[in-house]
Image (tube, rainbow, N blue to C red; front, side, top):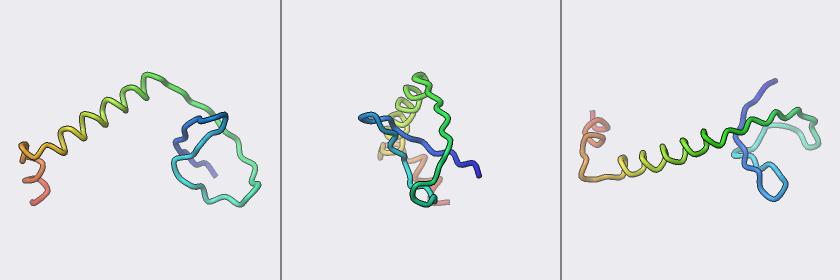
Length: 67
């Protein structure tokens, strides 16, 4: 079985973004992919999306949702 899940490295441990359906003490193989540019892009994209989506003055999204 292969599963991909996002995680954050904090205080020497990987903190998963969601729980896994694995029994306790299950052995797994972890592959680390780290891309600082990707993280920066995701942060900027999320900020821009929140600003656009939360803008009440821009009713384009509200009109699309009502259709």
